Length: 381
Ligand SMILES: *Cc1c(COP(=O)(O)O)cnc(C)c1O
Image (cartoon, rainbow, N blue to C red; front, side, top):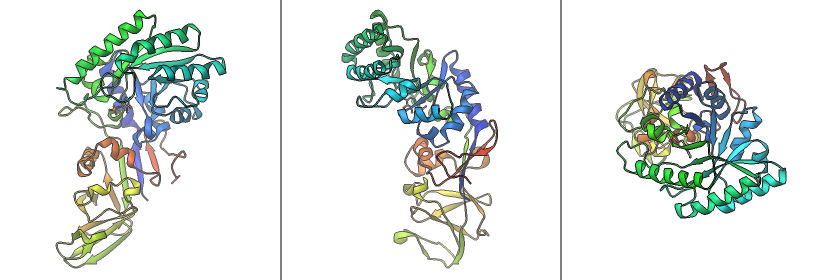
């Protein structure tokens, strides 16, 4: 059986550690993209019991999934166009991020339709050049939001931004961004807004930049056990183990070409093992030629190209049988390979490795309230 085993106790530990380090700021646990592949509902319940009081997601659909699971904690959703139907998230008490006058007007129109007040967080673009209002549009956005607040259609609960280089402790970007942010908050207060939450810090900033914590921090990757600041260790614990098994073993002579294009040939007589996981399951094709897996406690190389559904391991002289476990990814203290190793092999970030793990891989949960298998979004074992 292939499976991704998620240790909820490790996630609980990470949430508590981040909450402790960034206190008295509150913690908004970022559970977008199925909690970075770890399972959104299970992770949300775990972090809310261990120091987080908010949840953060990208899309309104993600927020509504949390509500459908009975989670009532405050949720902020931050990535929608002006044309979104905001009625469902407003009805579900989901806070919405706002980047422009047109955006806040669209939200207010939906709130008026429902006879409700929408809770919004105004986003300032302090330099990342993604979402958020550019500084020159900030005054107009603030005035529009204040006007709608007077009419009871919106309530500006937060003001926020996102950092450029929080993972680099020596970056000059952070202080420049915080100065712009403070300036914008002061402007909003003078215009009559009274946002109770200012938030800019991702995991790296929450752990390493106390000045950026304000009232709320937004950790993602740190909750999943990846140390986010170059050259520093805070004691986070990896939570995810990705396991497969051997489907077939064959003896081959030296010089046997393996997988498409024969990029790899066996250096000596030995054995090959076939593993039924591929890039459709999140084993990055780009890692072929560099990646290793662990079989019977030994590291062995992936031989040749990783295919959509399968890859081949050069066992060398290692005796292994069909059905034996193959560990693709595991916490460092269990012998790895770690997500950081995979990220290097695939020339990417741990975030992309985690979020790439596909739907064909069932998630199983350890620790937390009870060990169980997800019945939502993934196949039941
Ligand atoms: C994904 C995301 C985060 C979490 O960032 P990490 O670096 O994973 O901690 C925080 N804020 C926003 C706006 C995000 O999109």
